[in-house]
Image 1 (tube, rainbow, N blue to C red):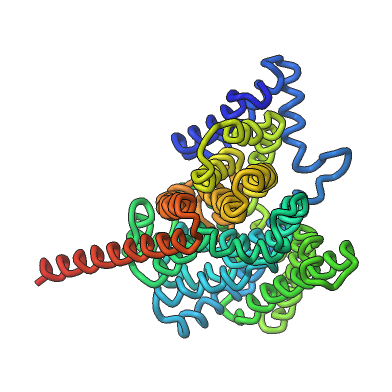
Image 2 (image 1 turned 45 degrees about the horizontal axis):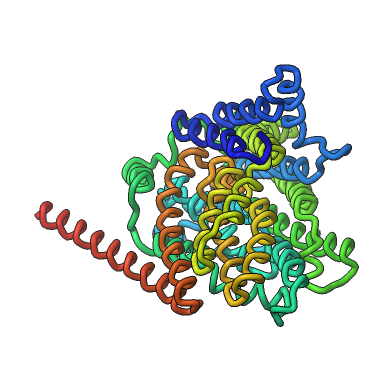
Length: 527
C-alpha cells in the first residue's frame, strides 16, 4: 500500500471529516487511525505500535528528543503565559486604549495588521504568533472578527516568507535551488539570483498579498467571512463563544486598571529582539560565517523562538512585580494563576499540532507525496502545461500532507529534472509554480501547522479560520492557474504576470462596484 493510490486515503479521511464535523481532533484522529491501519496492513498489534510511534514522534524521533517540535510547543505555551501576564498587569487594556486613540478606524486597524505581517518576514511561525499578539487588542477594539485577523496573519506570513531571501524559507529554498542548478550547465545564474528572479513568477503569493491589502482597505467581504464580520460589527461578538478558541484566556484573576502600555510593548519587543538575535547567533554558530545567507540557512528558529519567549516571560513577570508598590494586591499567587491560565489557553493548539504532526509522520511513511509526484512524472503531457500542472500538484500535495516544505523537498527536484531536460527556459517558472502551489495548499489545509498557528495567534476557532480563508485562497489560486497556463503557452513570464495583474484588478473593480451598488440601494431604501 506504500506509495500507491491507497496512500492518499488518510489525509482524505481527515480532511473530509474535519469539513463535515468541524471537530479537528476527532478528524485528525480518524486520519491517524486510517494511516496506522494501512501501514500495518490491518494487523492489530502493528497498528497499535504505529499509533504509539506517531503520537510520540513530536517528542522523540531518530533516537533522541525531537527538539524542533518541543521548542515550538514550549514557545506556544510561553506565548499564552505572556498574554496572561500582560493581561493581569493591565498592559493589554492600556495598549488597547492607547491604540484606539491613535488608530481611529477599522481600516487603520486592518492595514496595521497587514503591515506588521509583511514587516515580520523572517519566519512564518514567528510571524503568525507575534503579529497576533500585537494586533489582537487593536482589531478587537475596532470589532474586526478573529476570523478576519487570522486571514490577515496567515495570508501575510508564508506569502511574504516564500519571496523573501532574508528569511528561514529563503535560506531553505536557496539551498534547494543550489542542489538543482548545480547539476546542470544549462543555466548560468546562481541559486540566489534564481530565487530573486522567481519572485515575480510566484503568482499565488503576489495575488494573495494584493488581495490582503484590498480587503484591508475596503469593506468588501463574502461567504463565511462576511457573516463573521457582520456579527462582529453589529454585536461586538468577535468569535463563537460556543467553540474552542486556542489562545483565548479564561481569566480567573483580577485585571488591574493601573497597567501601562510598557507592560505589553516591552515583553513583545523583547520577544522580537531576542528571537532575531538568537537566529543570527545560532546561524553564525552553525554556519561559521556572518554572511546573511549563511546565517538564515543555518539558523535554529525553534530554539530562537523558545529563548525569546523565556526572556519575554521573565520580563513580563518583573514588570508585574514592579507594580506591587502601586497596588498591594499584586502577588506571586496571581502570577501562578496567570501561568496556569496561559497554559490552558494554548493547550487546544498544542493538541492539534501533536495530532497534525502524527498524521504527517504516517503520511510520510505511506509516501503519499511520492505517489502524487510519480503520477505527474510518468504522465505524457506537453511541456507547455507543466508549470500549471506543477502548481496544481503542489497545491494538492501540500493540502493532503499539511506541509509546504515537504512539498518543496519532493517536487522541486522533480520539476527541475523534467524542465532541465525538456525546456530549460521554463525551469524557473516551473520551480516558482511549485512554491506557489505549496503555499496555496498549505493555506487551505486544516492539518497544516501554519494554519493552526495562525488561528492560534489570532485567537480564532481553527475551523472558522479554515472555512473563511478557503474562498479567498481559491480565488487567488484560480487567478494563478490562468497566469501559469498563459506563461507556459506563450513562454513569456511578463505576459503571464500581466494576465494575473489584469485579472486581479478586474476582480477588485467588480467587487468594489458591487459594494457601492449595495450601499446605494440601502441608502435609497432608507430614504
